[in-house]
Length: 313
Image (cartoon, rainbow, N blue to C red; front, side):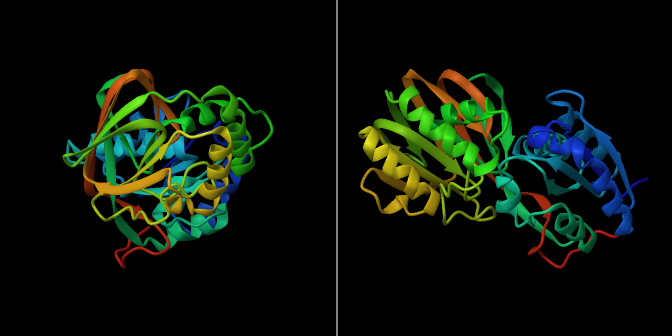
């Protein structure tokens, strides 16, 4: 049996997954790793493949793609865990943002990521779970959930054919200034504390950034057992433009329109409807109520700065 199950999303990074598949295969062979490689064929396929690989006894499942691919593999691993699966998570980031890889301490670049897999250091990380909206049965996530402005920005970014990474998300965010600027009144309950306002954007973060370069929660840690909840109230478009620059630097928490707190359980509700994403994948449009909880140290990630535990190849 192969030690690693490598799941490639050929559409990740606007086709980078397909273009880099042979490079990934060659580098993994060069590092002497024992692996099987398979491509996804449709949205959601990586969930099924990851679950099957974990239950079959693979030591690790490696996502080759972006944040959406990582999200599907996390969901597959968590489903397998409910039935006794114990596979670790590896990642080779070829997506447009690779924000989960950044949060987990997985190095940039295919060669560095493959070397990281060969070294086999592991780190336990938290996993979030969101219930409600279009997914009443719930969805796991590794990096974070966003509500409001950044959902529309994500949709606009996905429409772009050529731009990728931070420039693409920046373009999407600027366009969103003219498309989404009538924030509903949103009630947020975090570990029993309730706040309510016209929130332009709400971010419940396990990692630190979205969009490849927007440091939404610059002090978040993926293994501390709590979300970093960041709330940005609606102001003028000029204020929002100023905040976009601050989010890129990670200095928005000093602005009067932005507040933050840490919590293990969060409820978000709005009569006017909620648009949300989980790890950059649209979770619900025009929902009314979602609930989030953090599940401490649920998955071990193969990373550059993890523990001294090793996976033998």
